[in-house]
Length: 203
Length: 253
Image (cartoon, rainbow over all chains, first blue to last red; front, side, top):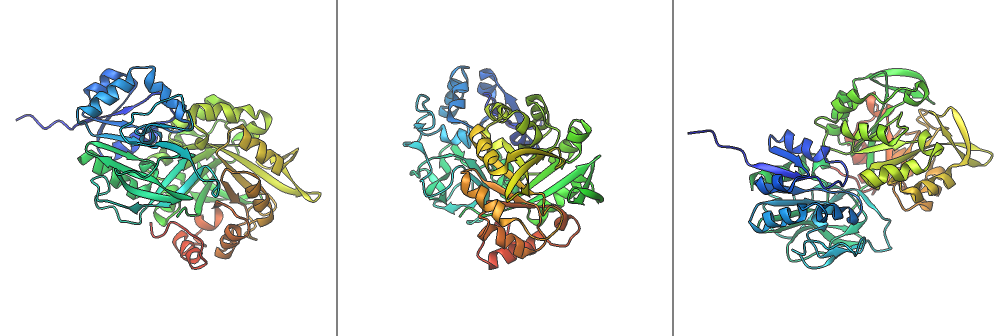
């Protein structure tokens, strides 16, 4: 019998910022990851990670390169998909930050700014408010802290398995079938974040 | 609930962690990678590495130190010192930093802030401001506190935020290394003037100093170097004292 081949995780590089930290965390966990700009490499992977920081318009880099179709086809085919930060916001219909770009629309609702009662951006460690059982949050303590840095927030929807509170509650973790998303940065959230990434590796 | 961040700062000179009093009289405190890992285990919310002599010596940031420190560090990691151009920032990000801190180069050319933000996102750009009380106001200094800019620190913080900075790292040069407490007045006027987070720095000496800067200075985060390296204050103990004073912190973590 040949040795079992570890599933390949494609980290989609569409030009939005620095992907080193995400790769470094998966490397640390012993996962087989490839950072790629190529739709073919996304299509060939077993799992897909869509990271992203900055402005929602950065997601235009997906639309212009064929990566959007490759990612959506993989997600529709049932491949485990993890969106991080902007990558999670992309799962919704769109964002007021860049109305001209459409999200994947897998979840209803749009991303909006924080209420004016709080400073924006939301930067730092905030606690999770767990709402439903979740494969991504397996063995994660209910009030765990995770690291955020973002100016827009996704609404709480049926697929929201954990929220965080900043002015109001917003989606921290979404999960529906093979589709996962986290607004925070698991790669920067110490042991809690590594556990969440490990859970994704084991889905 | 969003917590107040405790940031451990590693002032690095020639590959070693040092910490001076008011930027002078440097003392050796160890290997940067070891110090960063120890602080993360102790409960630090972030690590900042400042190459404190890079600008004055016209050297590039020690990328190998950055790379070694970033490896295995899964909390936010900021690097500053000697970043003059977008290409310098790119090299530091490539080596493993999550954010860069710029000071002298941003004063010289504020468009650098926006250029780095456009490529890596505003969240990755920290503008460091070294401020000193001058004639009843606060003046920004550059080059490790050696050169006065003639610019009002508050105005400069506003401009930096408008240019696309993600955070302000605000150091009181009057308090730096003295352990006499943060300059809460300085922190408060800047924190009230900008919507981006303000990290208070300079003067940490006791848990009460942190309580004061969060309650009175309205800081979003507080940074300290010397008290953590030499074991005067353990971060876990500090966080327990902050919790007891109703300052929300990430603890236990």
